[in-house]
Image (cartoon, rainbow, N blue to C red):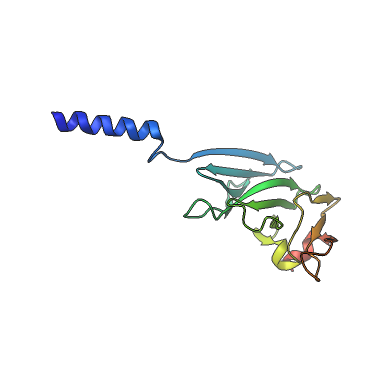
Length: 167
């Protein structure tokens, strides 16, 4: 009997301290302009916030996910800004390291409805240095990227037709 009370007391202590508790998750939904797709940003909040971006077709219920979580819960990424292109063909989101690594780099990703996949602007063009991208009709991205001369030089504004990232 004493061991069961001790076990109960230990469980209550651990719960009150938050030890062993599941991380809190929240979901933000962002419908495409044409209403055919829903972008879901699922944030897992533990020591640091880490996100998973999912694109769900409202017609077929198919789901494509892009996880930016880490086992350590401090090496992942979280979404700072997200937006659908005006023509609903692309979903763009900028991110930041959950542990604050490479504070100058705001890795930016693009999902293509037609290709049904995600690509990194940083890998296809150059590392992105500002989270505040702009989307212009119908699917043109304006973003600041790392100067080829290095981090000590002014960023370069790039204008990209998003379709070219998937060729």
